[in-house]
Image (cartoon, rainbow, N blue to C red; front, side, top):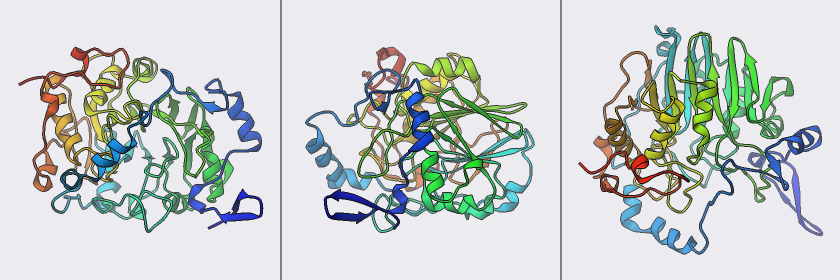
Length: 397
């Protein structure tokens, strides 16, 4: 615990170090100059987002605490984690591009001779406290040190399931560069990352790291780690371009029309890493369903199938009312209907998108039956301006 925050006159309470630090000084001045910062907060593309609709908190609590639903939100057995070794990752990818999903939104991308680590979380819980908060449904597939050297760590935003203080502190001693959205650098400096190793970007800004170009691109989400969510740190998706390959990481986002623009400016992509879990009708604007995630990928690719989609943000932490394996089943159905290649690696399983991506539904061995409401014709909310035909990709079979 470091620092104090005054809650009332004469009362100072310890502030957990994991809360990070609020931007100030020149960093805050730069935030105020951002064209995406208005009325004292960062603004989303597509207008105001809904995180919890008015009057729904009790309905959500009943659903989240329902005993039968709770049983579906955890695996029935041990999740089959791939036993990744340092030797697996020491061999260069034959095609120049290899992805290793480490769980949730964490991915090690080896691209054109460089190594990029997205949203690494090695802690047991995604929480400011080691004794409370969502706990892992499977162990990390390998020790952090076994990854080998990392050229750049990319952070999408400052929520605990994407920005993990113990992991950042461990990586701070390795000499890696950190690419983060505007304002997030305050947290990393607070935890010991030197300013000269930060590449802190607003949307549409780029940084060169070795032979890679990393560009912060828009996303539809929000931020915050402490008791006060000031919305003074930006959230982003990321486009990474090498000499031969292009990849995209969505971070957390609701569906919005801007994916087409991102694809036109930085794509098409050899692989995308797309958030498809922790969605709910209670927060339709900030996380995508698998159908929306598939449509985002298609938008990024110019409107049709292309590249390989790696679903992320599922299978590791219980963060929403849906069954833990539902994102995998839903994405598998939707992608087959659309003719889009999707990779389903076990956590820790390296694969090369240009090779033969893993497609086995590994979760079925430890999952109960998953209902398939998406197979009935219906309208899916959360994507403004999206028709039923556009989103009902799985359809009636």
